[in-house]
Amino acid sequence: MTSSPLLTDLYQLTMAAGYWKCGKAEQEAVFHLFFRKLPFSGGYAIAAGLGDVVKWLQGFHFSTAELEYLATLPGRDGKPLFERGFLDYLGTLEWRCDVDAMPEGTVVFPHEPLLRIKGPLIQAQLVETALLNMINFQTLIATKSARVCLASPRRARAGVRPAPCAGAGWRGHGQPRRLHRRLCLHLKRSRRHDPRHSRARHACPFVGHVLRHRTRSL
Image (tube, rainbow, N blue to C red; front, side, top):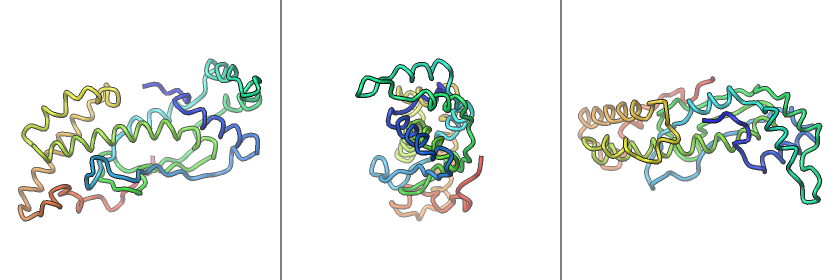
């Protein structure tokens, strides 16, 4: 996975340029990453993608080649979109934000922050798109794995591992298989220990075991 800060939208870059122009680039800000609606019309989601987020943030910086590319982008008036001073500023950026996050594999619900970024406004703005892509996709895949496991625990492994779309988000980590095994084992134990669960509680039998301290600082 690339660690390039250009894994973003032009919108984020122009917003960053606006902060720099107004002298607000270093102003402290707090951003929360959350979702509004559960996937698959289910009752829960499984947080995933934190490992890739940490690796990407650790390598966050603008290379000379990337800055040269940004210098070639024209505005609507045909002039350079970004001022030279702004590009020079980007070249000096070093990641200085604090990151709080749900532990990998935590059961999560709508409007509940999965990530919290605190630090210079311009840095928090520039990483928004990349973090949304990494967390959204991998949380979706982890949630689908849990649902398949619940629907057919004995056959879930065959249904999840060959998924052709999973490789892009998980390649080289071996994490989805380990996470999937832990989920299946936990779900089977939950059902065996408490067979009186209603159908609604079967949808997420380990909700009651969610850690009280739901976030941790990295």
